[in-house]
Length: 450
Image 1 (cartoon, rainbow, N blue to C red):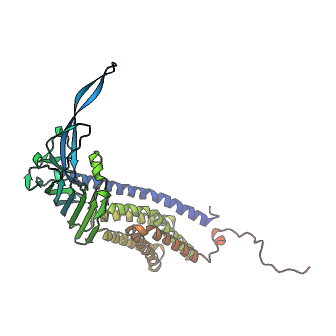
Image 2: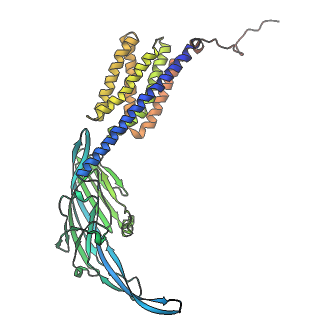
């Protein structure tokens, strides 16, 4: 290999980069472990407080029996007989209109170094039911209505701060949990007087629910006309589910959002009646600056970061005639790897931008001091430190601008390649590699007279 010093140097640098990929994988393992610990902390808080909430209802639920006579065959004699049959069913009537005004206040709970966003909320709803008669399913069937109930539900009953206040047709009704024997589709309900069910007559209602939860809150649009307005002090809402708000205003002090979902736009009523999972819309209260997601993304660019740094040192070593030992390459690479672990540890205690700034400044200062002695002076040391400042700046831009990450990464690689080509355009690679150029078959020669 002494015959080809340049090739041997390239192979050694490549081997060093493979070795540095091992601690990089270890750093990624630490990030995943801390992310799992944060998820466990969130579950722990939700278990003690309340989980994500979805509000469903109210709906008007009326069990009934249908009695009819049917003709059945008697054995193989060809004779028939009539028998009386009674079947149990349930009629569900959804609100014709329902308007909800909600207010949500957030609070941060801590489990060690992990913050968890919890909330308390107040939901005031008003609407109306319109009862329509139940049509028999069988010919000559007779309908007998049972006890009507207004049913409602939330995902986690532990989040109820008090008993929901329900009023139907001006009468306050006590809300109680449904028993297992009743087999109702929603966990809470209130009985109403059967005499109030008159065909075509509106049955107005009001409902107030004080609810606590963690992370997310949503609604199931079961009315013919659903309107929800939500105000909150959370400045980073994430709107999700099957419907986005029609209007929304987001500022540093909170947000205000309004949804309007007609039944023609959703299959929630059919899905609820069939016992399936109905469509819904929601707001998540996740922190948009997820330090673990950003740290993991940063490690994905770590190898490229090391390659670019080593490439810059190698090219300048060729151009400036610097002499950098492979062990010094390894020290520089170790400092670059340590940056990502330092970034994670700092980001758990402060804003990501400040953690990134402190981690990058610490590594750049360390490398500047080290390179001053390696390269024999402050000037080359500061030159390489300036290059690292540019690389750290581009990496931060890639992390915080996920939509433009591909474009920024491509421009960075193109710029580095262009800089390398310009810097090495006058290098005689044959002499550097210790080989003699082959004879040029089309070299310019003077013709000798014959």
